[in-house]
Image (cartoon, rainbow, N blue to C red; front, side):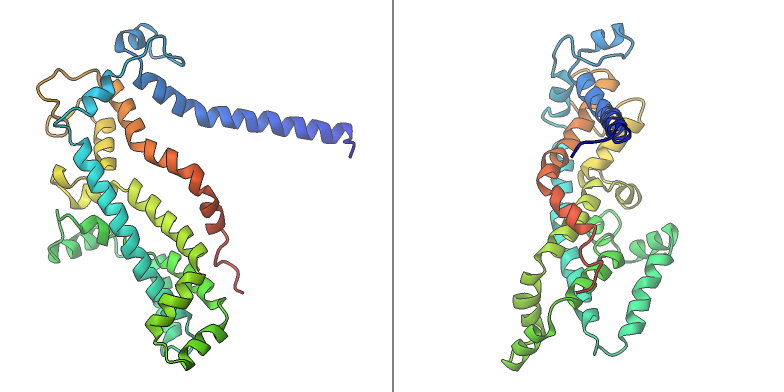
Amino acid sequence: MKLTATEKLFVVSNYILLSLMTVVIILPFWYVITVSVTPYHIFSAKNGMVLFPASFSLEYYKYLLEKGSLIYQSYGNTLKNTVGGVILALILTSGAAYALAEKKLPGRRILILFFVFTMLFRGGMIPTYITIKQLGLLNTSYVLILVMAFSAFYMIIMKTFFEGIPKSLKESAAIDGASEFRILWQIVLPLSMPVLASIGLMYLVVYWNDFFNAMLYVTDWNKAPVQLVLRTIIASSSLPPELLEAAGTTPPPTIGIQMSAIVIVALPMLIIYPFVQKYFDQGMMVGSVKG
């Protein structure tokens, strides 16, 4: 189909605008990577305007990943929190969603209103901190798993999806003597893989990127997640000795440490995201329309 002059102008304008937006988005990432592999004397000589590395160096990465650094320990903590948290969150979310999707559940409307109320009004930071302290969860290895293990918003999305599953499947299984747990495990969940994958990935991003809860509830650096390590490196004008012990070596300039730490922390998500992007796209709509 032949485009008119106005339509051609519109298409060209869109291409130009999208190209500029792409450059604006990619340029900061490119700058971080470039600085992380550029020797400091070159960075200083160019007053920080380094878009292409004139010389290549991995000294910042070697320092961060040197034996004795807590980067390894914090990465392990993040992986443990993320895997354990996503599994626990999916169990709690799917269990609550399955129960509330059953219209014959006594007090169903009141329970749904209770969950919706928690989305609108929260207890606040100080009451939550006091509750966690009284439960003896402060500075434990599992507090960061439990504190984010349930989202009422994700539960409502999953509940709506469960309500779209034909009742005849559950009724036929119940006639054959299947319990509610067996119906959930062998019928409902296998049919709900799209919503489980989408919500599971959303939980994964939340757990992986969390550092604020670690600031509140964790004081032992051996239990700190990698995002808290990154936040401390970026926020500190100098490297805390208790955070990065580089086996007695002289620390490189802070700017290089900050940029290389960003790359190290962000790299897993940058690798994984292109392969799971379709699930995020599905997650924007899954469960939002009943039926």
